[in-house]
Each structure stands twice: as C-alpha cells, then as structure tokens.
Image 1 (cartoon, rainbow, N blue to C red):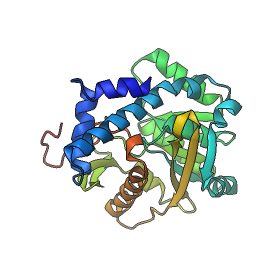
Image 2: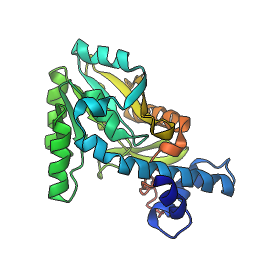
Image 3: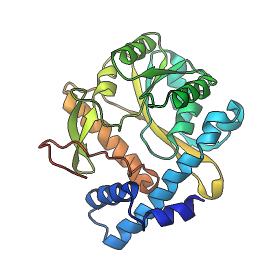
Image 4: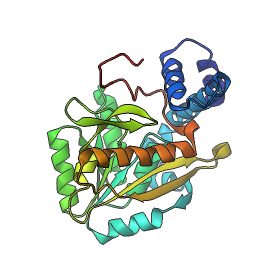
Length: 266
C-alpha cells in the first residue's frame, strides 16, 4: 500500500511531496533531479510505512511488538548503561520507525519520554495509554516536562528525546544539519552535562519485505564547554545516521522552516 500511495504522492501536488523535494535538493546537492525524485518517492513510501505501522506500536501486546526488532547493534551496551543506574539519555530522531524503536528500547525500564501532545484529546489519551503499557511515562514539552526529565535522571532512570524537532522560540540555537542552518533544541545537550549521564542515539531501520527492524544504538559524547559545539556534535551524529538510510528519514517535516535571517525556506 505504501509503495502505491508513495508513488502517487511524488507525482501529485501536495505539501508532503513539496517539502520532501525541497529538503532533499538542498541536503543532497550531488544528486541530479532524477535522483532527488527517486529518493523522494522512496522517502514518502517509508513515511507511509511508519504511519501504517502505528497500529502495531500502539495496540499489539508488548512482547509481540518488541519481537519486531529482529537484529540489533549496540543495544546490549545501551541496556548495560541503563542498568548501571547513573541516568541515560536516548536520542531518537525521526528515522526508521521511531515509535517502535522508543517503546522497544524502554520496555521493562523506568523511563520518561519527552513529547508534544497532539491537539486531539482522544489521540493524546491513546498515545499515553499505549505507551504506558510498557512502563514508558510521557513528559509533555514545557517547564513541567523538563522538570520530570531532570527528576528521572537524578533517579538514574532513562530519558528519551526526539532531538530533530524544531523547538519553541528561545529553546534552541542554529547549528548545521546537512550543511544547512537548522534551529535545534538545546535541552538534550544541557541535560547531558549532568555528572555521570551517558547519551545514546539510535533508530530502528526497516528491513525489506516486512521482515521487522534492525535497532542501531551508538553512544554519543555531548560533553562540551560550549553549548553550540555540543548541539553541532548532536546534529552531526544524527546526520551520519540519516546518511546510512536517507530514504527512511522523515523529509516531509519542515526541519528548516526557521532561518537565521527570517527568510522563507518553504
């Protein structure tokens, strides 16, 4: 279904295709127009796959959903750091299936994940209920949510953040992402400065033919005296992961909608 709809989306006028094409043209200048459109088509297909897979992530029994992770890299080291009890930050960019990745990595572990509540109260209740069945607690963005994350780290628990969302005014700085200035949250980098806290970044790569996912987790050193350097390091780590499977990144998101000179990007 995703292959069919994705092929149509890239040919028809729509916001998702326009944004995807715009992002890919500036992030992959080495590609010609045919290459950009091929990558856009594949990206839209994978974004649709992620959408269609939400039923699994939200409704399947937890053991069955976790079994979708067929292969893994760095997960044992990550779980060892969590078990040590010094506090761990898990960065989960919008790559592969971040929903299944986040829930799977937090399964059986006290954890708080920062999120932006949807406008629809019914959808918000569904999200909270489905994620809570694995022990994952959600912290809404804002001062109260940040306070929950700090309390969790002090207690030696796991904290999850989607680091590639455009933050609210005053909550970020501009840092390079695919050689483009991207307004990037500083929260993860600030939390990472706490003594003993370890930071990991990862994603669940979709395997061919519905064969499940390959979870990839790598430790990331964000300890820098300069906040801008720390944010730049974080963006570089995300970019490296995206380049491993660019077709599975959510390129239809307006990642560069804020520009340093307030010009229109999209």
